[in-house]
Length: 62
Image (cartoon, one colour):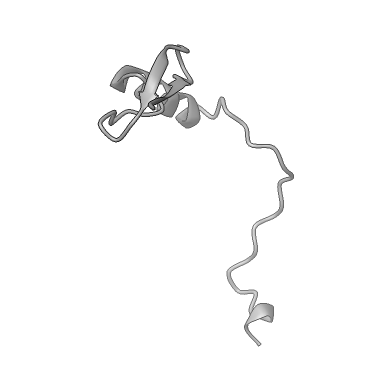
């Protein structure tokens, strides 16, 4: 039985199988569209922002 998923960009049904090199996308175009959306920072992952640790902080090395 082949599993069908919806392409995250255009919502077309796509077979989830090793031969589909763009899975879960239906095509290279949809894959690149998704990558561009990430690059433009239009997607957001929930959570809180924390200040980055400073490079000279050696407190955790003891």
